[in-house]
Image (tube, rainbow, N blue to C red; front, side, top):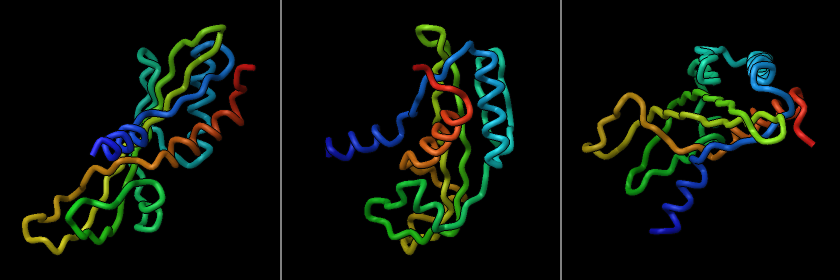
Length: 146
């Protein structure tokens, strides 16, 4: 049981990188990268240095890549999913900016168990793929610290 708990914490923890430069230019760079990747920006909170994307729909095969879809004691046929990225920036040491990425993933599925009536959207833990891909793109466009 402890191993499963550790795995859940590991894959749902935010991933982070440190890019060069002050906070404000880094915020602009990250926003440009997300937009170039096709993400729609839902909210930019400059006071808290946070960018939140709009929910984006994914098909069942993409859902399998970005989320842990196996549920204990339940056989669920996933029909679709959606995700939202939250990118938080903060000042790091040596004139750098820390960029943290976290994904909120929801799946919609049908269960054969009568007690598991399909709640419209079920929260799912991330595999880290979305966060990692976003941070790789940010590292490519916004120079990392050396």
